[in-house]
Each structure stands twice: as C-alpha cells, then as structure tokens.
Image 1 (cartoon, rainbow, N blue to C red):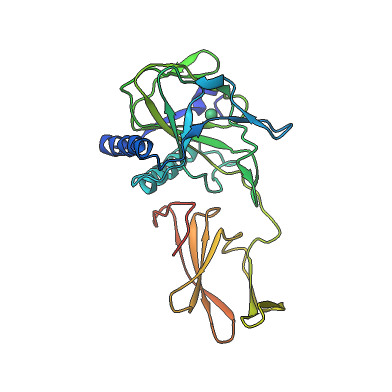
Image 2 (cartoon, rainbow, N blue to C red):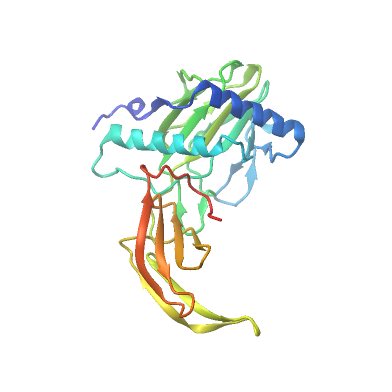
Length: 288
Ligand SMILES: [Fe+2]
C-alpha cells in the first residue's frame, strides 16, 4: 500500500455546473424564505456531551434543507465512495455501510471552519455506533475568495465546483476551511457509516394486533430470518395491497421485497431485491 497520507485524498468531478448552480440557488432561496434549518456549526465534545463552536461567531452555518437536487447529490456521493474504494482496491477495506444524509455548508464572508478531524461521535448513536470511516466533501461554487480547504496543517487542496473529495475521517486527516474573504462559499458533506452489526440482523416478525383493545399479542404470528439477505432494515413498509413487505436497508444499499399473507400474518419468501449500483437508490430515505 502507499504510505504517503495525501495519496488517500481523492477528487472526483461528479456534479455538472447546472446542478451546482441549481443547488446554490435553492440554498439561497431557502435562506430568503426562512423555511430552512440553517444553524451555526458546533463541534461535539464526546467527553461531556456538550456542543460549541471553536471560532466564536466566525464558524460556518450548516443545514439539512431538502433541495430538488438532493437525491442526485446523494447518488453522486455514493459514486464517489464507489470510485474511492475501487481506486484503493484494499482487500481489507472495500465497502461501506451506507452514509449520512447530505449536509450543506455555507460560509459567508469572514466565516471559516476550525481545524478538526472527522471523528464524529454524535453521528452514529443508534443501531450503528462509532465514528465514520470516510468523508465525502463536495464543493458547489468557486466564485468566492479565501475559503481554502487546508489539510495536514499547511497543505492547500485545490477545489473546483462540482468536485467531491473523499478522504479518511480518521485523526491523521486534520482539515480546516480558511476564512472566506469575498462572496459566499457553499459546500456539502456526508460521512460513510462504520460497519457494525447487531443481534437483530436479518430478523423480522409479525404480531397480531387487537384494534379494539389496542393490545399486541406477546407471541409472534410469524418470524422471518435471513441474515444473508438483510442485516436490519432501516424502514419496513407494506405494499399497497398488503401482499408484500418492503425492507429498505442502507447498510446493504438495497430494498428487499418479501411476500406477506395479510389474512394469516405469515411472512413468506424473498420475492426480489433492488440493489445499488444498478438500482440507483438514494439512502437514507423512506418508502411511501
Ligand atoms: Fe470535517
């Protein structure tokens, strides 16, 4: 393997100019409409559980606002991880376990991001625990001044709109954004999940429910186990006619369809599976 750290920072030009411009327009509009969730970025302190800025009021703003381009950006992030793992071709690390919903970053004039690494303890605190393995950082515009991405304390990384940089989230990759001196810098970020498993993997059950009393029978009607097919679904839905169960699973980038008998509650066989990359699914999401 290569032993220079910079080798593991890779850039992929994946977003067209019109997608970048459209996204920036919508981010600006969300600000004007005040329907956004922009807030000042803070760093989580794993020791005491507190969150605070490291640069006072100079810290950037962040948002998970839903743009029309978000599904496409999620797909491009997926592609970036895919290209990155292919480029590295490590037999000991060749996959990821889903990734976080894209977060948009906004740097107005004088704003910056303090030096840090992406050991984000507050990101995966549910079924999946741990810190991210790799970071995907994309740039949406480059018509600003200042705002350089600096890694390894003093290395300025050239960054063009539409590029996604992928790099390890670990402590060997400290980075910061220097203050923006003119204009507004828009970027986005997502982190790949740590690969963890839990005891509930590959296991779903159906229970009888009495709508008159609101009680659930303590014993399952039917149990389905198949940890070859799925680990643990993020979301479970029924088809419109209740003849099948749909399991969306970010961990395996797939949707599994399993037959269901609504009269008996019996969970049947796996009917099919839609999986990335062919399926072009964006995660996380829900079905309706
Ligand atoms: Fe970061």
